[in-house]
Image 1: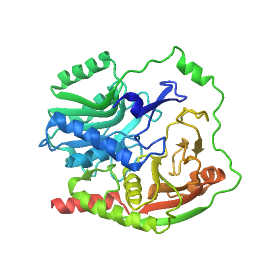
Image 2 (image 1 turned 90 degrees about the horizontal axis):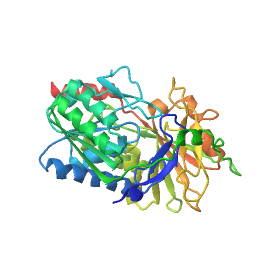
Image 3 (image 1 turned 30 degrees about the vertical axis):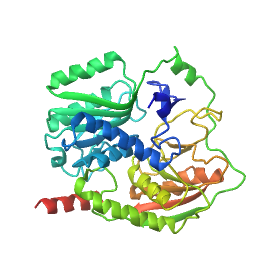
Length: 398
């Protein structure tokens, strides 16, 4: 595959980095066929297997927020013993094992919050998954943080696209020598980014983007509660173990059946996950697609990108809304959320932490979507509980 098969150039107002590589296979900014999203993760996992061998038995780590679902796809394909992704949501009752910073991101701090430190306490190869590697600095910082907790001899950095210059690759090699480890890299495509001088200033000088479009009618909202088993992880935020797979898959099938009973086969559906909650709604989207529904998948994001309704630009429509989680001050965004020449139903999949009054308030997610004329089915995944998950794991190891 080539870079142009996987990403399109976009812009964002960020003093650290004004360009944005918008993935066409990730299901973040652009509504994407769930089979394409999962297929990209599986191809990336196969690249990892080519490096490590089929008997390596790795653990997998994904970067929040963009690669939480991608990392889980890789882990599933590898049948990994454990998958963990970093998080920007603080869960005090679980505690933070370690943390690191991402220099160019809009939200820079990453936390690692497994249910116990023992989940990563092994010497198996560790695969770090991200959608894009620009310098490798964030991956190296993560390796240092994880290596301090649980040293191991082998790491693999896996990304959809690798845009590093030679100096960045050399820096990873230097870090590997300092730690006394082997760090390999795999990707679906490699390339480099050429930026015009003064891009940050030029983007900053652009007119404010037109966000939150208003339609000729107000869309409707319906709510559906999806019961999720308390001791089954809904993703990798607190660690997903190989032995969780069977119960997770069963819960996905039941969730898709529950949702399918509320859908019309004649109307296209866009399943929209919420930030780090990517893999669960992705799997629901695929199950609905397998049942004959026309489905695309994407998620909300913390990243403020520049919206421009012009052919060929990937961010044609954008919505800014207040974060539904209590205590969060920064706005959230969702882009595009549309289906060419048709009127889709948006199925917004959220977890309990996002099920607040802020979700339904003025300028909340439901308000801005319905103001554009979009009909929304709100699917609340309720029941998953990190403390119940921890207790179940402690019981299983007793």
